[in-house]
Amino acid sequence: MPYYSFSKLETFENCPLRYKFNYLDKIKRDEESIEAFLGLCFHETMERLYQELKFRIISLEELIDYYNDLWNKNYHENIFIVKKERCKDDYQKLGEKCIVNYYHRYYPFNQGRTLAIEKRVEIDLDGSKTYLLQGFIDRIDRLDDGTYEIHDYKTSSYLPEQKEKNEDKQLALYQLGLKNLWNDVEKVNLVWHYVVFDQEIVSTRSTDELENLKSETISLIKKIENTEEFLPKESNLCAWCSYMDLCPLKKHQQKVEELSLDKFLKDEGVQLVNTYVKLDMKKAEYKKRQKEIEEELEKLKKIIIEYAKQEGLEVIIGSDYQLKISEKKKISLPTKNSDSWKELENILKEINKLEEVSTLDTIVLVKKIAEREWEEDILEKIKEFYQVEIKKYVKLLKLK
Ligand code: SF4
Image (cartoon, rainbow, N blue to C red):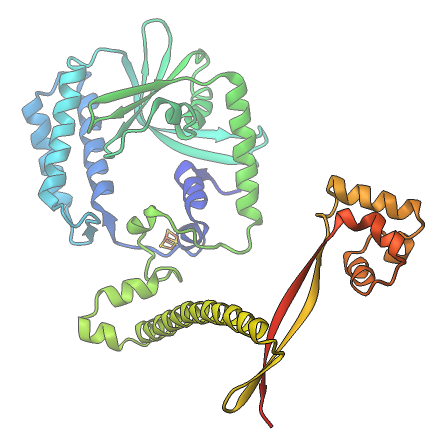
């Protein structure tokens, strides 16, 4: 049984197709987002700070130098920046700011005793090693009162609310793994450092919440293992996906984005879409015009009917066509299943006429009334339930 990791599970939830490209097809990509690179440099700097803490407290200047050395040595050409208004230096400076924030907030870094840095934990979700998870905890601390703390550094430019972190799965899963490391793990604090905002968020999990998380995670793993069709799931995370050139939702966009205007307009896909849009707009215009014409016709029909009435005509002659004016009764019944409808149904039952209109079939009943198929006294009994409207019709006929 392969090990799952939190990021593997999260990738599947965010986009099954990206999961397939990465973990099943194992398609390797050199690209790395600048946000991921910044996170890596910050994490390594923190590792250095806490490793040295056994011997000395590194000065802020030395720590920033360490960070900048890491940044400059490891920066590579395949790092991409999604936010076009930003440049490499903006992110490097943001990292420095995060270090300054963290340093000032926690100096002299004695809030707890650091037990481990970048510690691997293993989580056996069902106790039979069928569903195994592994993760790396940024830092594990133990407080004087015996509370353990799982620390996680976040360099993201998004600050979540407390509620969101109370439902966060990653550190809660690590808490399950922490219990395997030492026997005295009882109370555990989950601590996130949102260093861009100089903000710390702390949360805890009850035994029930951890048990629920275990079964939810097992269900998710089963779902992944039973998935046959890994579909793309579009979201704002696509901007950071390095498989856009393979993704059916994004590969055309990625291809044409790089073209000059001339080549863009000559692209077969672009031309097909543009032609479709033109036709679709014509169709919308046509529908609008059709509606206007129908309204005009309706107005004209009323004028013609009025003219025919005044002149006592049933046929009006034109150059090539003639218009025939006729009329039909339109009978309206109460709405089906309304109180009046039920009352009408009862009356028809009482006078043994319901069967003829088969459980009050509107079409049959309208025919009975319109063509006066029933005796007048019966029609009289039900007359309050229907309305007769005379509808006039105009029919265009080709002149012979
Ligand atoms: S571009 Fe978006 S939809 Fe396509 S694979 Fe990547 S994350 Fe999924």
